[in-house]
Length: 501
Image (cartoon, rainbow, N blue to C red; front, side, top):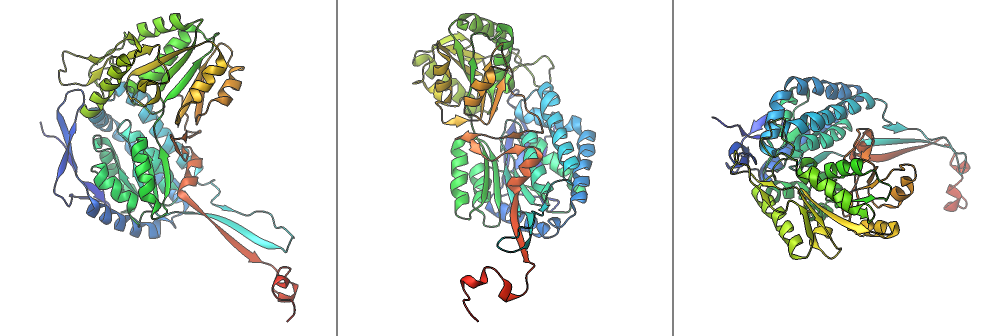
């Protein structure tokens, strides 16, 4: 069976990598090569920046109505090719088609709808009221696009993240260069190929390759005005440093260690199902996963027992099987890293309530599944308590005083997500207010709407994405000030310099 070999997309055309090299893309369930992606380098980035810079000259002046119309038409193109895109995304990520159909693809369609419907009413130009003191001026505030933006996406939702970043960037009038994750670029490249006919050449470009080769070149390139990155904190810090030399704008959506606080009155079944969903959706390979659960001592044992029962019912298998509820780790090094964390938890004294190792699936001997694992008796000095594992692993911490639970929840370098489980969602608002996170859920997890802004605090990053307000991160504010007074002798402030003339 032939496998797709994808080149860069630069200036509306497929472009071979200057290195002549390609990267293997591996199906994490089958363990087989299912595609090849161009191995880009700084020369390819230079070419893409040149194309995007030329396209920006005209794209920035395109009417908002035209940009909105182009974005709206993307939904038709994506819809007509949805089956192909689903297949490509599932193959190279291991994400189940059930999840892709239930979350990722509907979210992309919602993003398209939000930007196409709200773009024309966005306040690109504002006129504040005229103030008489010290003298009357006409002030016009204009929000202008930045220029060429580099968009670097993660491997745990490549198509979702590409549109999450690309839509506000081009809606604001910028041009973009997308660098998909090197392990999972099939659907992103194909989707950007499909929309090329809607856009002027050079508005949306794609350069694939390794982070040190392409990501670093984007972050340090003087022709790029902004970087938006989703991924690890370590890489985010490197990008921030590389971008500093040219004063690039940067948006970072990084890691998390989502704490959930289970109050004594929490409904057991709702909490058990919700908290299990919170740490097992996407096999835990989601930055907003709820991976620390602080449970009141009065319901600790009952809740853990029910969660272990639910986790044990997860079914590992093909991403194309509707019955599959547990996917594999995305690639070999990550699989081994997750198993290493599980072993460290055991070695440091945590108790295994369920799982605790690799999961073999007879039909897929080369797959990289990990058993859903719940640890109890976890203490703050353990690695599994503090570090982001990015796998199906939950740390449960028993508490007796809710004040202690809140303090422990906040005692983290991360601040992306948090949650409260309770029988009184109104009273939970006070706890939610005190949890240090960009998003706090009450009696739910992973609930995201296209109308809310999304991002983190502390070392989970900065900047906001998803909703129409995310365009702010892709715009520069410029003020035009016009004086109504043309007689220099009547200018109120000139006397500070000109005492007599």
